[in-house]
Length: 204
Image 1 (cartoon, one colour):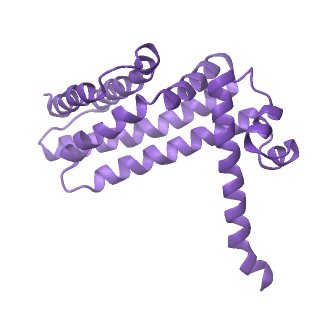
Image 2 (cartoon, helix red, strand yellow):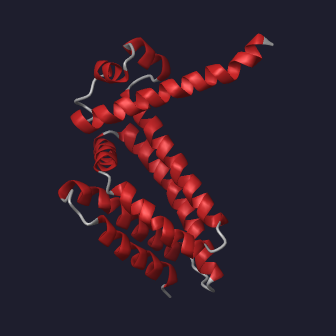
């Protein structure tokens, strides 16, 4: 009885701790890079002992895997919500605003680029990133298929894959622009991206 009643509290506490570590690690990775960050730095930023860090994560790679998993969950939730919309195309165009602003956030951009850079050097991280990307691509492809099918288009796998890569490249490319041009006109980019997404979804 006692164990059962304590379980939600224990789970909640663990989730809070993991989130605390994840946030601290993300800040350290942004400031110092993956290799320039130590577990000791993460523990100091998180305000807990290194022993607590290792209780929840085996190493820095495990923390990156958790960050990637959180991003994946958010993106899968987004595509599920889009498919549930009464007008998927309109919903995708409207949510483009959110996508542009998220990817132009310097903090988000710096962290994501650091993870991709580490994936280029580290086969284990590359496997984590690519597996998550595959799930995102599949979910986005299904979302695009749904909206184009509603408009009378019957697309093969190659066409859908091309549309997925084009839209993904558009948004992910903003991360580099956020670093190169931190004063970018976000509202102007939003206006252009909404038109571009609309054009891609309606192309024949």
